[in-house]
Amino acid sequence: MIQPLPVKNFAIQKTGKTTYRLSWQPTPDELEPTAMPTGYIVMERSGEDMSFHKIGETSKPHFEVQAEDDEIHSFKIIAFNDGGRSFPSEILSFRHEHNDRNPILIVNGFTRVSAPSIIYEEDYAGFDTSNDFGVPYIKDVSFTGYQTEFHRSAGESFGKSSDAYVASVIAGNTFDYPAVHGCAIAEAGRGFVSTSLGAVENGSVNLSDFKTIDLILGKQRATTMGRGNNGVEFIAFPKKLRNALKGFLDKGGDLIVSGQYVASDLRDTRNDTDAARWGEEVLCITVPDSISPTIGGKIDGMAGPLKSSLESRRYSYSNTLNEDFYIVEHPDAIIATQKADESATFLRFSDTDAAAGLLIRDGKSRRAVMSVPFESITDENQRNLLMKELLEWIDK
Image (cartoon, rainbow, N blue to C red; front, side, top):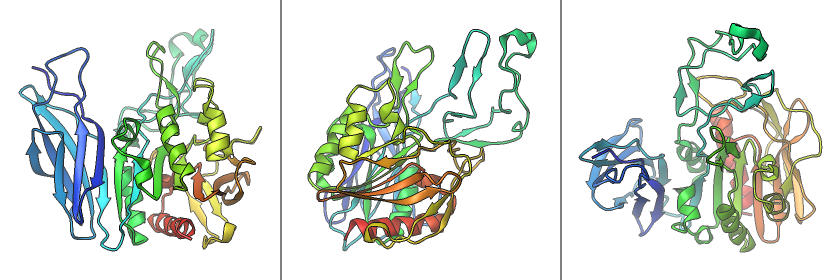
């Protein structure tokens, strides 16, 4: 018997006045039929305790928890059988708020783990890390430095890299960003629950049950895996998510979404042909025809667009390799399309003046779109202030 794969379609839903249900599904291993779980370990982190501890085991793919405090509770699930334990699931969180009957839903759409983009030409090849470093799994200790020799004709020097990062730890995808967003939502005095992308795509979570959604896209983008035999993964807006969001927005739902490739991935030719049109007509955004790439790592907040309480301030986001935040190399410049009833810029890149954040009103729906991932803003107090101001505008 072989240990199971990590569980999938993890979600947290409020089922009673103070009751929350954690649900998930086992992941069958196509190559190993014995790798099915016989049970699940539920791990929790809450309050000032920053470490996870076991709170229970179950043979069923769900678990009930009670919460009457206003702390942030985070959970991960570990499947097991007689062969061993799986890798842990992504981490989801919730916060109970007594006066908040309709909590905000955080959707973790940032699932990408990948190598850097590649260059593959007849005499020029290598890892294009300066353009897209890729996404390490949690943290990377193997990266020594950027590649410096790309010419195949260089012989033994082909592929040579610097040693600038040989002693460094590089941050990747921690799969723990619902808690980061949740902390800012909690500071605004709101409750929230969270879900995986998979639970939205398979219908376990209905977006229309919520008034406000915070969609985390991070560095999600269409990525060709390996030699391309398995197609493309990690599309920012896969078709099932697009369909669910369209229904949600058409009914007047409000959306906060942030991701480095929030607009450009919709125009990626590896996507299906409807993706770009969906972005322009439903999300009401696109990318400019041409714009210089951003390199500065700073964005300026604009005061009071669309009658919001947003303040003018400068934000720094992580655009270098470091141990604490994944790198955001060249986030999209974005513009609103004419499909929107009303739009205004609330964030601009300090080096190009291109828009990094848009407020959009379309019908009864309001949405805030950011091409700088919210969790990559390095100052926690600034993240909290920005989230509070965005929620105040959405709630008007």
